[in-house]
Image (tube, rainbow, N blue to C red; front, side, top):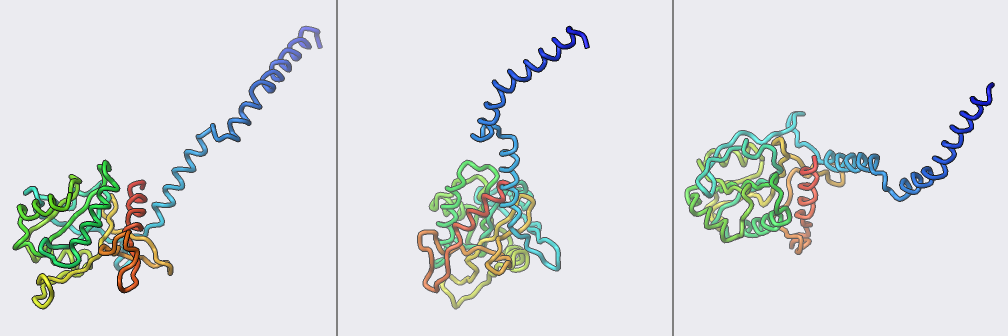
Length: 247
């Protein structure tokens, strides 16, 4: 081998040695201090996906249940359908403005949730009145102002009574009905349904691995439990809204 070739190999070895001395300790230090973030970033997304995917789809006869088509009028006199909520995570309730019992609690809790997600353009609420004969758009507008409803995706909806009751009792299986023997003349569930961006009803699992299906709407985070010993689920609902927003 020529002296010239030997000098070339010596030069290459010298360059490699210098690179190792200068750069390898710096790379090791950056890895140990989490400055190299490509792998960490993928891991973060994987964690978010895992959190989102642990929410169950509510199934009927083995098929994931979607919100059925609806079209009603909101507090601003606008026509709103289920398609206006596509691309948004939203909470569904059935209520009426003259309710003397659980509705004020439900809507105070929903306002708290609204305020927790202020600025999220892909979060909303759908509130369907079960007393549409009284709850006109004008009445609903006044109610919205009284409760501090400011989210532009929170629609208080009124329309034909038969269509609302069918949506409640068949579309969501959230009971609503007229009963002259109860205060206010109507009885209904105090539960909330959670809907994902594609219009599917979602929920978390209970301790046995079964879907809870709906979230208790009448017990606040501050109360913790009600008089019957049932625990609040508003905090759980907030956590699950975040998961769906990240899907």
